[in-house]
Picture (cartoon, rainbow, N blue to C red):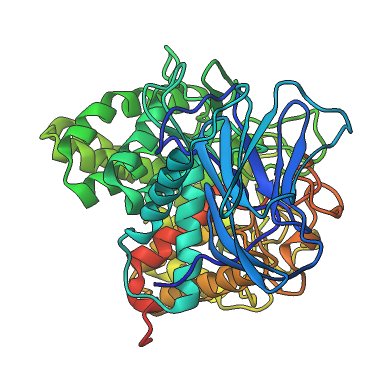
Length: 556
């Protein structure tokens, strides 16, 4: 078994809803420090808990996970155990050499709500930090916590993988574990978040991607991930793009829920899940048709007209230059997502033995296929694009969305070949790290979020589309390249990033995020820093490796 021994500044450290009750409003969440063995915790009065390494001649990690850190340090030729472990939503306990534990508040002022209790033992200093007042130290309870957390990873079933890939895979599982909250408020099921800090809340399409990776942890968790999203559905059928236990946003996000349910049902054979979700899915898709469908029958995103650099967060591609200087468009991504949802609803209706519904969704899928090809294909560039409703002209902007007709299955063979050609074109979308979010030849191509960097969710969708059309060799190559690039970055930095440089010239911390990056990494400042241990990056890494294990076997 590969050791989980890669330390990464900014890696998430949080108590998981898989282990017990979480509290969205009051939780102890941290990120690993870069200059000390310890964590920086995001509390009302933020603070760092770490071990002083003065005079330490060696430090070796055995396990670095999202809820457990185990290692040893060499002091004066003697090895001492080091440990941090989450006991509960608001309590971290552990062990370190006596006299070396430090608690430092960012403000320089102590917080009476943060208690740190210590006790001497033969092995060093036991400690317990809590947001719930003084906590009695129990050596037995701490040891049981360590054993339970370690057992989760040691007993985790996984395919036979190359050592480096296995290390990254286990870290992905660890990140996925940290994303899970227990039921609370509107959520009747365990629910997930892109990261416990800074995003904290549930996001619609993020959760769809999370469900794919969560299948690797457990089928029940994958189902809960989707059912929790449906818990947020409004009386009129709308599902918000973002929600917490007691609030929600006013816009939606890419509809991928039926696709997610279909994939889970296909994997598990669970017709009951299809029955649980079918009515809510139908109601949500009807809301999209009623509120986001053009007169011609295709779909448009809500545009943030008052924001210059965050024009379309409803699409998920917040700051993409695709939306610069335009208003509502019939969008290739939204329309393809809806077509794929119609396919999924057809399949779910068949599982539920509803032939009339299956026929209805099949007919609607055919209608959308025809409209996409009639209105959103640009023969001059041989690519799919958007259609501006105000000007009644094609918006000839090439992005990863241009390849979603592969995912939706609407392409003719001729048009499929054109898309494959663009994926293989170094002036378009063939890059050292595939696949850039916009065309390399676009004048706005750069390093800021959706204006050039690679987002793993679109790589997953496009690869699925290529497999659908029998382009297996290209899909395999793209997946190998993606996993290799993510693995390399993980081994170097110890984290999974929100997005990556398609040219492999810059490390992710140097990429822009709606502004120039800043250093050092500060978890609370998410606007100008690439987020670390990002949700769907980790879950889709796990999904890629699990679904295509043969590509990453030691013999490959």
